[in-house]
Length: 365
Image (cartoon, rainbow, N blue to C red; front, side):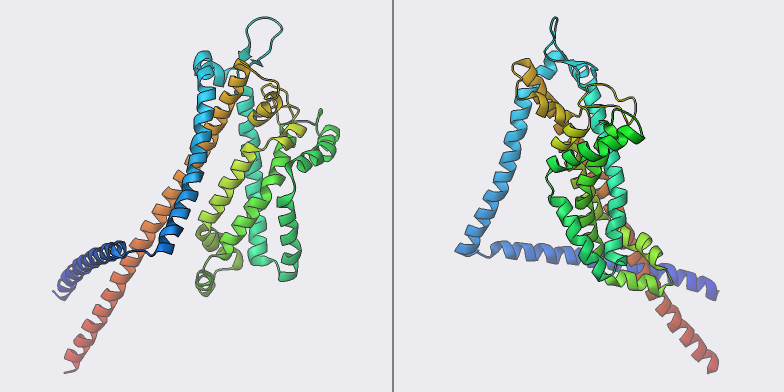
């Protein structure tokens, strides 16, 4: 009988606690809404109004610039896409805009594949080495070593892309030609150069994200007996996931849009890559190489290439944001559930302690 009473008591108390938490959430939301309404009723000063207008103009100028660029590219590029056909343009394997005889052909599929593999390969390599370097600098390296590595990484971020390309042409391409496979100018050389170029972005942002993790997380992990490596990979990396994802997105954007360095090391041959060591041409390289002398349909086809590149970048950003938002929402839900469940457990423990004390007192009497 006492056990049944305890079970009923637990059920009633749990439902009571859940209802009280729901009421508290409603009260907090009402208070926040009331505070927002009161803030809206306060009249801002002249300086505040001017500052708001200036900030609004800056934001509107950025949005307007993006809108004008998008509209211009679409207006110049979409007519030729519909004339040729979306499938023929995107999945066509022959690019010959100025043939000696016959109709020109505008197929960009080899360049799409080259851009895709160059971007994915460089981002994967740079993410691995960049996050590992960020962990070393943020958690392991002593201060003297950080003072040497940090300026070197910042200098690496400031080197112009043409210098990277010249280094790849003089050093990396001959090494690939001599020790791996000719001709040296290849997709693999492009991946190596792009990896070097996006490494500083991933290292710097990932390091700041790791340093911003609250120190209480580390203390709690160490208090539970976790090792340093377990704390880094199980606690700090998941907590810094948003910053690391932001660094990967920025690095991906730079890898897709890079032109000059890629032109110097990839060979610029419009063909389907048969291996990592085949010469290729990316979408950005195609635009840069041919825009100077293009006209008519040829020029419109290059703008259409820009449309495809624009959609490619948008698709990658949307995928990253969807994955990040999904993981963030799941993390917040888990935190809310753990907080509510822990509060209920604490209250139940207090209730049982009280009942045991009363039970012991009655037995003593």
